[in-house]
Image: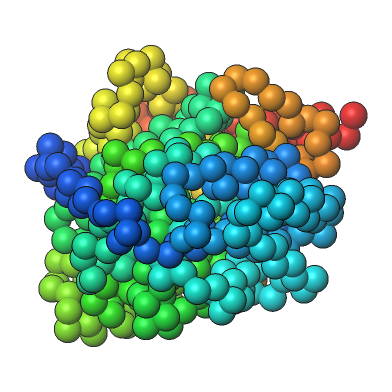
Length: 481
């Protein structure tokens, strides 16, 4: 039994080491390309500016719907070449807010329409597909409701698409309106900074496949249509379409210099819900596109491996959960591990460098911000159970409801969410997290006497589950009161 447990533990370590190696490769590619300049924005004469459509997919966003509509209406682009579509799937007072603002802007000469669906078939993907059929724009810009684009957004992005007919999509960088709101939002900001610095720069500038992030990007309409259009059999329609487009030969350009801030969820339950959707959607996309990636004649072997690891990246949290569950048998049986184990353990300790580099790349105050890394680490451990359920959901189901992340119009450290009807209560993952927390506490008790070298890791597991359970319960009590 002891030997079997040792081999299983080593196998899990091997899986985590593969993912760690993947991130090490991305880090090296980032270091190689981090000083590469983005293409200079091509000059376009005013007479050559194309017709652009902006799509705003919105569902129950009463706090931020009016702001995003007003913001895109003020973008610097000729009004006779700009069309705004508000794709409204709301079933609360957001619908009235949208109708009033659209009517007001129409009276000022803005080309804006609201498309309201009583039955949101296909959720966000379905709304985007309906809107696409009713627009005439050659280029389609998409913003989620909580984003706040700068007025020169179109001037900085559209010329790249006009100049390169093979360019199918331009992705810009997310920033954060409320990173300073709490330790939870600061940790999320750190994770997203790593994605938009190390990961996106490494992928895009070294010829690897990268994904559309669902918002703050511009699509060439032809690229959407020739790649199969918006499809709702995954809940990450953005990842799905961007990979299909690249498999069809379209290029993607990432412009980290163009920055669009947005709101981070302040609630742990909302963060878990968001991560659940992303993990489930990645898994569905892996099921859908694994074979097209493997069999693609356009991609070389390295591109295929990195693409598959990218789409399957959420599996590392399931491996982490397995490691947590194996720790107690490891303590009890104390198996003799293969010599390979120490090397694998060293490899899986390298990925935190990604978060440090992400802060150094974007933030002058990175020494202060990186101090929040322990919170991010505990969040990652804490959502391992929730994300494992999401992966199982994605492996056994296609599509599913698009559970939106509630927004509250938070800015900096200001704003309030506790009195909003959008705040979330207890979720179904709490019992599993509580049981895992109790399990790891028992492991701590045994570790003191039997295997002290594992104690630091076990304490991290306990801390992650305790943080998740306590934060969820505390915020749910606020909702109850």
